[in-house]
Amino acid sequence: MSEQALKLLDVSSLGARADLGAAASSGAGEDTDASAKDWWRDLGVSAAATSNISDVEHVWRELERNGIESPGQSFDFTRRWIERFKVPVDKQLFVAGEARGKVVALLPLKRDTRAGADVLTWFSGSHVGCNAPLIDRGAFARLSVAERAGVWQRMSRAMTGADLVILHSIPAFEEADFYAGLGSAIDVECLYRSVFDSWEQCRATQHTRSRRKHDRQQGAKLRAMGEVAFVEYGPGDPGADKAIDTLFAQKAVRFAQQGIADPFADPDVREFYREIFHDNNALAGKLHVLTLDGEIVAVRYNLAHGTSMFALISSMSEREELRPGSPGKQNILHAMESIFRSGYRICDMGAGYSDEKRHWCNVSIRLRTHYLPLNLRGEMVARLHRFKYRGRTFIKNNSRLFGFFKTARSAARGRRGGRNRGHA
Image 1 (cartoon, rainbow, N blue to C red):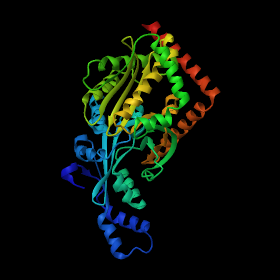
Image 2: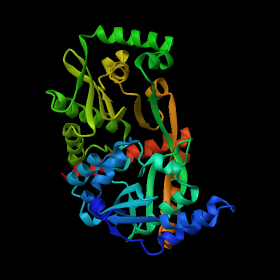
Image 3: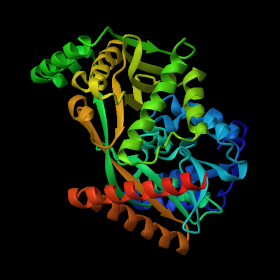
Image 4: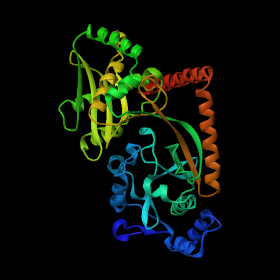
């Protein structure tokens, strides 16, 4: 691994080549000749780690150039996250894995504490629909199964000072499971995408005759209430900040109605989304906004990378009189046309099933959470985490239990709010 390019601290050079020689020869078949075995042994697998994101910028951007599955894999997104939330250097870890003479994988991780255990996990958590290690997919496809396992094994040895690695919501692609050797995994939910070469193809496949009729009827009802306009904003555009403020205000109302904690309530979270939108780097910000007589009634916040558009947040006005016109559905109709007419080929709508995903998405990808215990304590916490998740999934899939849980949660929040107001 090039120290000039990475400036990384090599944590696993001793024995790396010999270990891979044995692993590769066992995976290559019994008829592998001596010269081939020597070749594998000389090639080796290695890993290195650093706590300075600048050390991996060059390699990260090279891997990112091949395309990303999530904004969480973006160097600019992660660096901005670290800056906004003032993540200490000693809480950061970036682990690179090398095979066949080149860096093939990179894991950006944040140190956290859960259930008394030191955990390594993603920086941005659930603020992105999925996440995954950055890999050179072409290079990984050429590696043997044993080599891939060797890469993840070596990288795990570089994850020092932790009990457990938890990697939430990694896509499980059907064509190749490159993450199979990255600990154990459980299925969690699905990621939904609209994948088409053009708006015409998308419209013909997803915007069915009955759906078009329904949208026309709702559109007519909304237009009967006033002048409807669809607006797009990019970084630096006048009106973008007002639309972002409206987005978070509408989300706050919706979360309060549902009795759910607002993940955007923290001012730093809101400022992060504002900053990354206006940064105008490899991630391009795009807002899709619907107005009624100049009032913003629906907003969709997106970040684009290459030919992919990531829809991260959507909102609509909760005004009762607007519901017959469904401004949210009218906004997404205009947004989808704009996305595919602009040359994008993927609109990623994130994880979790919803009405809009049923209407617009033609691809679903299973997501898995991977657990990589690094010691006995990590193994115990991993088991507790899996048990907690399965219990939560059972409740969500049982309508009666889920309804009871939501009622109890709302009541508990109301009691806490009453106590807080009493102390004010």
